[in-house]
Amino acid sequence: MPNYIRPRIAGATVFFTVCLAREGTSLLTDHVDLLRAAVAHVRKRRPFGIDAWVVLPDHMHAVWTLPHCDSNYSQRWGSIKAHFSKHLRFRGAAPEVPAFGPGGGVNPALRKGEVGIWQRRFWEHHIRGPGDYTAHVRKCHMDPVHHGLVTRPEDWAFSSIHRDIRAGRWAA
Image (cartoon, rainbow, N blue to C red):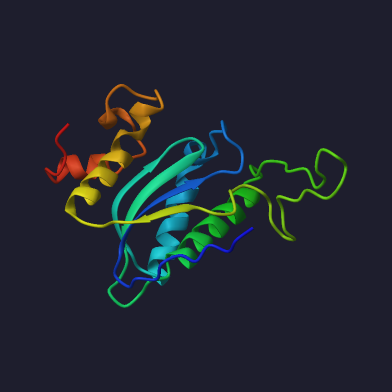
C-alpha cells in the first residue's frame, strides 16, 4: 500500500471529512459535548480557524484555516480524536471492538493501543479559490439534508450554519 504524503502548506484553508470506524452509529451526535470539548482543548494548544463544521451521527466535515506559520492539521486531528476517545472511555460509552478478526486472528484494523472508534485516516482537500471555498462550506451546511436527517440545513443542530446565519453569511 503506498504511503500518502499530505501537502504541507502553512496558512492553508482545508476541507476535511472524518469518519467513525463503524458506519450507522450515532456516537458523534450522542456525545457532541465531548467532541466540542476536544476541539476547544486542541484549539487552545494549536489554534486554527473554523470556517465551517457539521457533525453527523457517524462522520463530520469541516473547513479550517491554519495559522500563517503552521501546516500541521494531522496532529490537530489526531489530538481531537484522542481526546474524544479518552473521554468517551471515561464516560463508559466507547464501543466494544473485537480484539480478533472474523477468522480468529488479531484484528488487522487495530494497532496496539487503538480502541477502534475512528477510521485511521481522514480525507482532506486544500481549498483552491473562492468558488471552491464556497462549495465546500456549502457541502458542510447541506450534508444533513443530503443524508435525509433534515429538510432544511438550518434545522440541523450540529452545524456552523447557525453561526453563519447570525452573521448574515448564509443564503439558502
